[in-house]
Every structure is written in structure tokens, then in C-alpha cells.
Length: 231
Image 1 (spheres, rainbow, N blue to C red):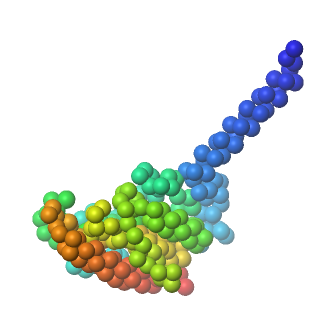
Image 2: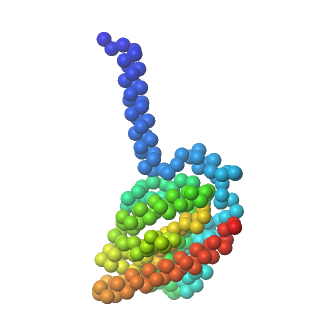
Image 3: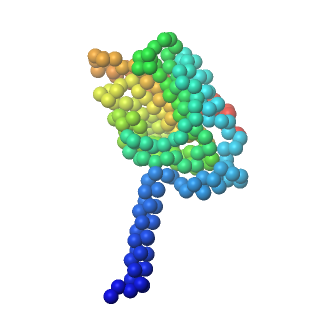
């Protein structure tokens, strides 16, 4: 006969299995527990208190790319690794984040802008968080672009930031730099317009120009960024 103790034992096993499964699902979507984020956002653990707002840091991209104009001003957003990203999770330990988009001056339709640049700025509560995000971002980008496109890493082990270029067949003319400085993580992408019928030589040239542009812009912007951070 089934006794009460057996029912309790079975119930305990089921609840334990559910808790383990819930933990597995949670850790695939979040990098930390909410209570940990709350603690890190307050003194004495918080390291980003004197750091300017993410929107102000994002607008600094205009200094690095003066030939482009703002097409979508800096707005706050929630950083996530969402489909088609390989790692699908929200990003923990974030104080605030912003995205800005620049483009060639002129009256162009959204899909016909000759040169576009997009900068994501994420201010974390602690430097360790920014470093962890940069590492996860590098792993993701080594697999594929966040839009699901095939790409290749062109940066070396001694480079401060990761650099990736979209494969010519997947959509040439797109290059991305991702890294962090102290508590600030960033991802900068530059894209040159690709037209139907472009031959392989043209596609290779677009990719080369995009890589050169994103490397220079990232170096200029990150240099300015360091000046904005507390000593």
C-alpha cells in the first residue's frame, strides 16, 4: 500500500527535479541573480557611479566619425543575446545602456545609406561584469554575427578589442569591434552599402574599407572614452 511517507518522498523528488530544471533554464537566460545585481549597483560594490550616462558616451561617436551624421539619436535599450544569437540570455549587472546610429549625410532611404555606423554602449556596475560580457560577446561573434551572418575574426591575441568582418558571400562591407574599458562595454559596427551585381573584387574592397574604418573609429572613440572615466 502507498503510504503518506511514499507520497512525500515522490513529491520531494519531483520538486527537486523541477528546481534543478528551473535553475538550468534561468542560467541560460541570465548571467546573475537579480539580488546580486541589486547589491552590485550600490556602494561599496558599485564601481560605475562616476561614469557618465550611456547616452552621453554613445553620442561621443560623432567625435570619432565626424563625416557621418546622427540618423538615430542615442536611446536606452536592454542588452540581450537574442535569436538568432547562439547564446540567448539577458545581460546582468547593467547600470544603463544606449545605442546610436550614424550614417552618410544626405536624403537616403533607410536601406540605401552608403555608410552606416552603429554603437552599443553598456555601462556595467562593476569592471568584472564588463570583462565577462566582452568575453561572452567574443565567443558569440566567433560563431556568427548577432544577425546570424557568417564572419571571421581579424584581430590577434595581442589586440585590446576583438575585430570581426562579415564574409563576402554573407554580406560584404560590414565590420565590428567589441571590447570594454573599465566598466563600459561597447560594440561598434560599420557597414558599407553593398549593391546587386558587385563582383568579388568590389566586395573584398568594401570589407577592407569597413574594417579599416571601424578600427580607426573604435580607437578614436575608446581613447575619448578613457578620458571620461574616473582615474
